[in-house]
Length: 388
Image (cartoon, rainbow, N blue to C red; front, side, top):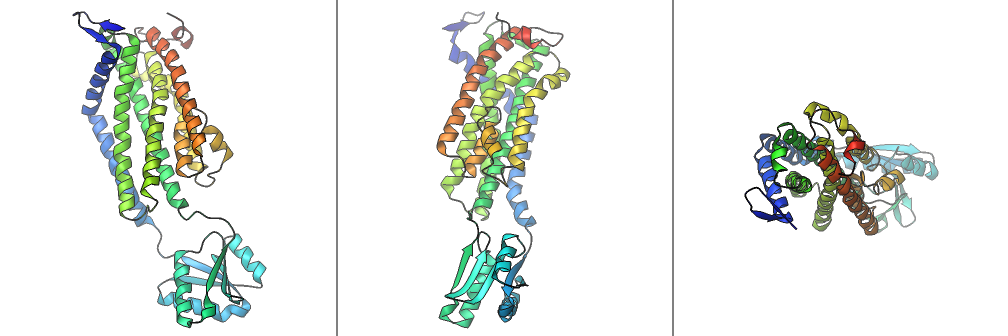
């Protein structure tokens, strides 16, 4: 099937869409607003690992619980810690049960029994802090006693890279939220600009509405990919270069790749909705009213992502919302980065989001076709959905 312009030149559907996308891409990439936003985002994500490192607290005080019989050993710990420029505070507890409770409640970082069977016995909540590990190793070397072997027993299972996974997940979610919000509104504002300036009437004299809509979405989508890749790669590279991220390169790149895939799926869905909203109004000042309901799922997804997932990666609420197409693009990449989403869940959620995008294409195309040439008052949704 082909389309033709007034000059008689025949273009296929794909060629027409590419032509519109190329025009949209050229306009957006030359825009000062895009260049400024890209520079600010890139600088922000480049500075984030550096600021995080500089803002990290100094040497923290580690609290070690001991029973009264091991008070002398506790004093030895404090003395050696001072020589190592570490801060250790000894907490004396009446018995082993109280020491274990202090660790479980967060009142102590470790409970030590210095003369237990088989050497020094340590009880920790999840893992032994690096500073304490160094301290006990030094004391063991100093005593030169074979029985001084240190054995740490965790009360809870721990993931030594959980903090870094949370950082990657939050970065992925933040990028997704910012870019979807920015480029989605870019689509809607572009439609209103063309509609108010009557440019759309000239364009639709030669091409079909769905071709114009598809080309606009593809062009702005490429702009969004650039806005996602540049700051994401810069932040990831700096974080790995300065040692803040020591997760495997494959895991980091894998999380970033899934974020990119989810952006394309999420943008496809949201771009259709934003374009429909833009077609229903004729003035920029009227755009806020029709966009508010569209933005709400994005905001809700980000609120859940930032307030729930870092403290509770296995949250049932986050898991459920990661299958809802309008919130999945933010939550599922974060759950994958945290290592709590199996591959089947990611693929199922992605399929649901893409299916919703395909369904939305039909409705968005109808709204766009019925509304984009109508000026004046806002077009009611019921009229916009009427079959032509």
